[in-house]
Image (cartoon, rainbow, N blue to C red; front, side, top):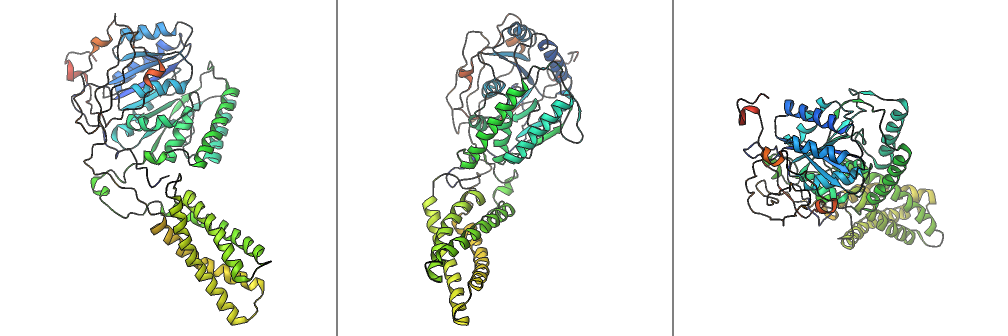
Length: 500
């Protein structure tokens, strides 16, 4: 999707460079609600796995969705005992709300989440986030439906999962294989642009995020996973399925009406600076041809029906002109939205005016064909007129596509220079006091990025209160950030005697 007036906000993907900054590269969020029994084993196991296998600094964030048991106390104790763990308290339920809140406030360039039951084998975590760190992909998801995945679960859940993904493919043309696997990651620069467009705060959050990302042309990496169903899962299947279907309808309607500004998520063509200097590169030619042919076939049928109707009370030339005029307006509007992906009202009048010029060329071609037929036969049969008009319209169609693509709807997206800094911001500090709200720094654009503060374990030692804030304080989307520069953390880098 694109418009003539909304350039993409995202820069070309880049590998996250390793520097001496101590900000975590990865922030893994664990949304929980009344998980007092499973939370501690989950966090300890995840922390041990990351400490042994992940070559960069990391953070584990427990997002407590208004738990009413002792889950907040367990989370606070873990945050006090483990330097890489923090906790966030939300006063409202909703997995999507928790992810939006934590991801919006996080300073890590790669954001992930997983379910507290750890149904997914953790060996898939590094393959999940590696394409995001390297700059190859924008989002990454674990897939239980890939051929090489190994899944242990009952037939009921297997049927529901596959049926839901078939619905997404049929209704929203989704190409990713598994929307609801609780094992996903996203680059922070992408999240800052994409999260404001996602409305759902519950289980449909994942699906909406992926559908919008895919429609915006972002790259989604899929990782086959080994997954074992949790028999004690408390998900209400019927209610969740109903909410998901409502979400499918809402998103489908928004996409059909073009009300979502997905074009602002466009990436520059290619990540190599040499590619960004290339001009006049055809974009989506095959897709545009298919769309134009479909619209053209429908327009031709509409034109023939109009011509047959007008022919009942008017001559052939008048009927042809009226039918071609009405169908041309409809054809331009359909091609504008469906073939060339132009949304909104901007430039619509100009496009219709240019479309009428193209209509005039088609009128001259078809009228000339009818005139030649009258001269040749004198009084041609109606079927002969239709055959001549079909042939003339086919010739006009080829010319119309070329004019639409080169003149009416040219691709005006401009590439940003390779050296352009999109945006930077001041360092964002998450307070460690229970009653303190997170401040939202004012955005600073064009200034050099200040050095990131070193992350020290003292901030998380016992005696410090757990990090807490409310959802409304963290969901501010006013700031944007360039890619954060980070360094790998290995035991020998800080303490050669570290037993790790």
